[in-house]
Image (tube, rainbow, N blue to C red; front, side, top):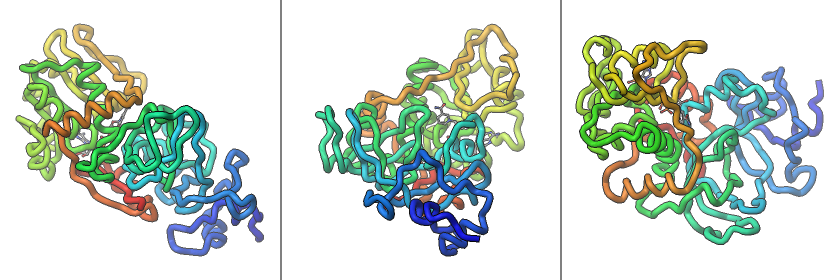
Length: 356
Ligand SMILES: NC(=O)c1ccc[n+]([C@@H]2O[C@H](COP(=O)([O-])OP(=O)(O)OC[C@H]3O[C@@H](n4cnc5c(N)ncnc54)[C@H](OP(=O)(O)O)[C@@H]3O)[C@@H](O)[C@H]2O)c1
């Protein structure tokens, strides 16, 4: 069987097993070969190619391949960022599996947040320049940070201070944006209130614990025993090992719940709220389920991407109120392994690709 020419030339895909691209492609059928939406790269048009992790189709981590993709260019209002670090978010493996996204065109590049250096400035961009260190989160419905470069709207990224490394900035971008929208804008958590944060050892919840403590709330969180010291170090006042203790039996009278776990955990979380309490969630309850109480509020933050929230995170970082999470570093070539860890749902802190 002969591979179509386009398939070899456009992607230059390297199999995760180190096999030559053609062999890897043949062994990994049925992958879609090339989709018309992907611009041809240098090998046939002279355009430049970057390295990226290509999702070849929905499925397991083996669907992630390290290969070539066309270099992005900056459109009006955009910059191109040379990515130094990109983080792995729980949403990434969900997209890989196909959850909620039936319209992807493959090969597709995952990755929602990154840190790097501006290498190209598009028309109309006046507040960023080539050489600026920046970090940010892709606009909603857009991904592409598992790559050497990304084009993104300048207005939704922020300058990165030297004091914050690229890996740390990438690790804090989407998690901080989500937690800030959830706790400050949506739940409007106040000093003196009590909050239960579900899944304290995860990326979003870890930032949430620090933020809630800074606001002046009492923080109760759930985590496996191996993560208790970690969540305490983030500021949790009380930690529940959800594997041995039923939080609905021992936690009561909370003003707010921040649910980053979802499923039945979310439904059961209503039991701990006082009348008038707020449950804010970023991980979904079981499909078709309804909130079991009408005397509390169920809130979902919009998590819009903007510079203002990234700069709020930096302000909190400079004030010493929040700090980077535990980080496990990977190369882009190890994306499948990073996804296995993420999908196991028992990591501590964040997984980050060091891209350059
Ligand atoms: N814009 C948005 O709405 C938005 C943005 C970001 C994330 N999210 C969603 O938010 C959720 C969290 O994302 P993330 O990236 O922070 O996740 P993550 O870092 O992958 O979180 C994994 C953590 O969940 C904990 N966990 C798993 N099952 C648990 C349970 N039953 N009770 C308590 N903790 C449990 C694990 O801790 P242990 O090892 O201690 O069990 C692990 O540390 C995901 O569903 C993600 O899709 C939404």
